[in-house]
Image (cartoon, rainbow, N blue to C red):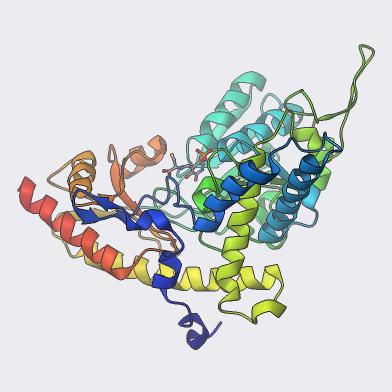
Length: 430
Ligand code: C6P
């Protein structure tokens, strides 16, 4: 998409969609830079929750009555929207879960218990979120397999040659984060998957921090499993997605038993529902799924303002939306990284050129938690801590970092306020 088209949309138009951005914190306009923890929600998503409970609240796939039919239609439509978002081949390859963590645990227990045996190896990168480490450690303990960490460079990139040399016929599965929540590094998942497939391994890509920032194409990268944390991509909390290739999901046993996941139940033996329902036991998070559908619609509506208008398909609108988001966030990231690096005593963590909107750093004179507290007094929300990446912190040689994580509605002025506030912290503590 050319620059002229990208400038057709101004960030102030986007900000107007997010009512919470009007909040005043400690006497100053809120600067929300904790999008990696959870994103804010556009009005259309907020309204979708009110509309559902006000006018179509009913259980799905169970009732023949009017309300149930409306709720079911919206629920099923959301699955198709997520299929388009991920460019999955089939809507039934999209499983709704409680979150990214739940999605990973589903794969680990349902696929892993079937396929990973004593002596097998599970490779996960050093920059993984605990969800993509601890879940595999649990499996490894259960079956007698080994979890091996893939090392990373000082810039925060996977050591690709080492990774390649670690792959062998013992490797059953590779767990790799698409975009690191602590570093922002965008990992070369397509290449990593190709090498893993060459030794017969299956790859789970944790897309929690990728989906809000870039166009995902699970077929193009050939991911076996791909997981989403939907509250980080403008949808309500309590909803996640597991994408899995049909052939893999088909062979997996159910993860949880209950309503909706069965075909027939008897004491002589139970048979299970077809995909995706086999993995969706019990009443799902109906409002959350409908909200997720509204979030995908919202992203598409951003693209609609840039593309061919009403004649564009949802996929084309998402292409356009993510072209704008990537361009906008890349500009902010570059600007913010430079400004922070210029502050004496700041050490940036995560300096790969392949990077999404995460500005993580330490300051020599002060603990990251104190940075977070002082920034809050200035109305600026960031996260300080290990970001559920303790092995990564050990590798970086720090107990914690301060992390500003961007979203499509952030501005240069907000980055300026962040940088000025970090300068204030520095002055206070020296
Ligand atoms: N990271 C952060 O502040 P859940 O909690 O299930 O929605 O997502 C877990 C998860 C998995 N993978 C990655 C890469 C993540 O960043 C997260 C959540 C938040 O960075 C909370 S620790």
